[in-house]
Image (tube, rainbow, N blue to C red):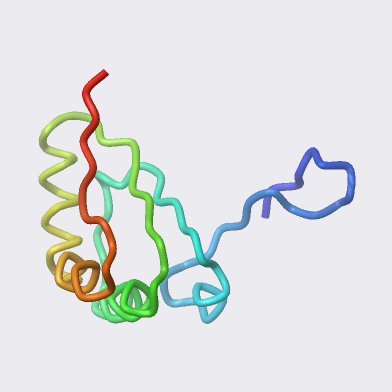
Length: 97
């Protein structure tokens, strides 16, 4: 748990594993260094359930095409693309600036 700078003593970020029941208390999740992800069978099942229940996952920090391919493979194992589509979510947004 990271201590926040808000002055109220409340954390501004927490680390929650995919297998932790607290995951379902988090409407928004952020996956740092997503290009190194390797999901266990239990994590795959929990991620799928989380996304189907309208959880939001922001995956970030790819370092090259290998890392992106790695994450795409792992998220595919979780069948998250189908889960996001059925849940009405957005799979990929690309904005050129």
